[in-house]
Image 1 (cartoon, rainbow, N blue to C red):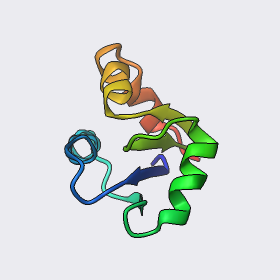
Image 2 (tube, helix red, strand yellow):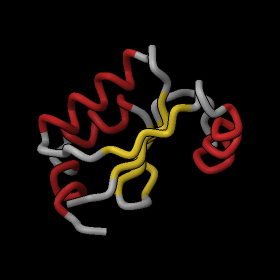
Image 3 (cartoon, rainbow, N blue to C red):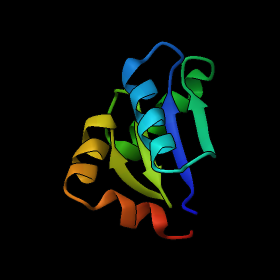
Image 4 (cartoon, rainbow, N blue to C red):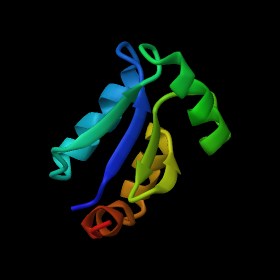
Length: 87
C-alpha cells in the first residue's frame, strides 16, 4: 500500500475531506503532520511544497497538492494507480 503523508490542522474541512477520500480508497494509515501543533513543521511544509495552505498531501513521497488536486486526480482516474504502488 502507498505511504501517505498529509500536512494538516485539526479544524481544516479540506483536510477532513482528503482523509475521507483516502479512506474510501481503502487507505487506513495516513501519517498526519499537524502544523497547528507543530509550527516548525509549517515552515518545512512551505519549503517542500511551495504552498501555505493545508492539506498538503504526499503519496509515496510525491507531492500531489491539496484536496482539490487529489480529487482532480481521482476524477481523472489517476489516483487509484498512485495509491496502488508500494513505496
